[in-house]
Length: 283
Image (cartoon, rainbow, N blue to C red; front, side, top):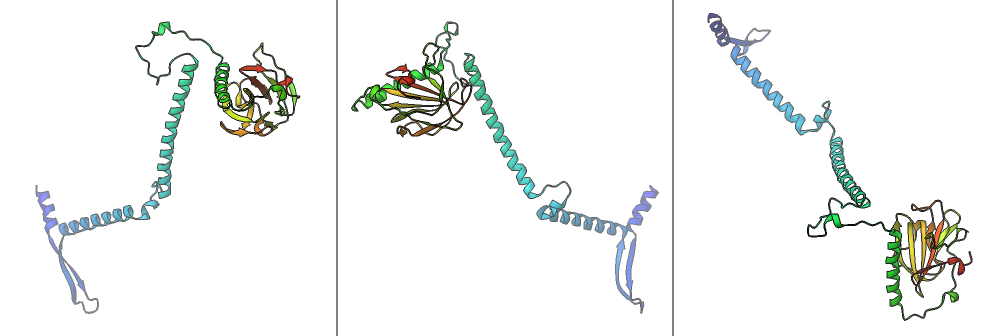
């Protein structure tokens, strides 16, 4: 206890700080001090200096010189990258859900996002059958062809023998028409990037992609005639476009699962039936 009292006594002991003139030894300035006052003033001054330094660094560009603190453009880049990654994750999730739906459909199942009505036929009585998707696609196009031909019934129908067909592409016929193995057209091999032309005047009724035949274009002509061009590398016309005989409509290619090399698979359909193009066109 005596040591503590001595310590407190030392803290409270008064001292005087005097400044003398070195020449005259006259007192210029003096101040009464104690160890407690010196400690208190020094602590307050240190705290104020620390606060001012922190404010200076936090509110000015000096903070960028602190090791480990990113620059402004780096922070903006981090925020932008975070947004891009978030968008990318969303798109990847959508893609995965799409592929899962396609796999479910291909395996005969119902995709997860498709609601099933409990009042429908029981699942045990449902029978799944395999279909030729190209045949279904062809029937839809022929149905559309019939509707277009009825709309244009005011035009004079001419026989196929009186029509002048343009050659769709210059080349060599490598496979001929054979309806028995469902080869309803001919295969023509030509030069790379050769242009494919419309054989007659007409209207494009389909222009797009199919899994087995790649890029395909269907053209409706007069007299209930439809010409078909498959396995193209690029399509130059869209649905509804009017084309003239000999006009470029596509570029020869090698697209689709049924294609084994760059060529054109060409078909002619007359009144819903496939006909041999070589009987009407000199290739």
